[in-house]
Amino acid sequence: QVQLVESGGGLVEPGGSLRLSCAASGTIFSIYPMGWYRQAPGKQRELVADITSGSITNYADSVKGRFTISRDNAKKLMYLQMNSLKPEDTAVYSCSLWSDYDPEYAYWGQGTQVTVSS
Image (cartoon, rainbow, N blue to C red; front, side):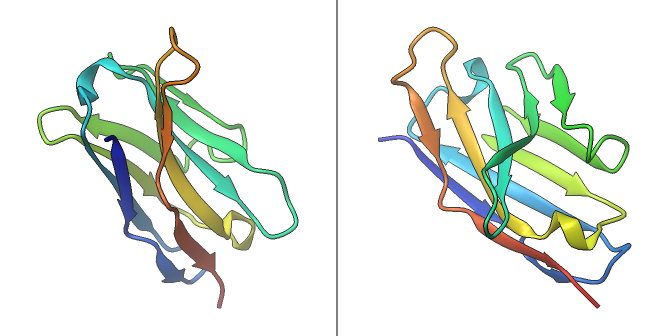
């Protein structure tokens, strides 16, 4: 059973930083792409950033230059370093792991709340 567990969310002032972590179990972590998604109230879920098994990264335009996605395959952890946070970054952030070859092999964490407010 694949499990993804996020941590690191919280309340931060505008301009502040947070680092989210996603811990994986029950899978061969290193061979799958992963990503961070977010969903704000009343809005659709959107991709924030993703990372291939070889650590090639991709970012939404809204977070480029502020957020950094990374992974530690030995520890089965994925991270999202978020700097220069803005109120519009407020959302529930979820991590995901999937297979590019099997559409049924896709898993999500439960999500962690990030609130950017003064």
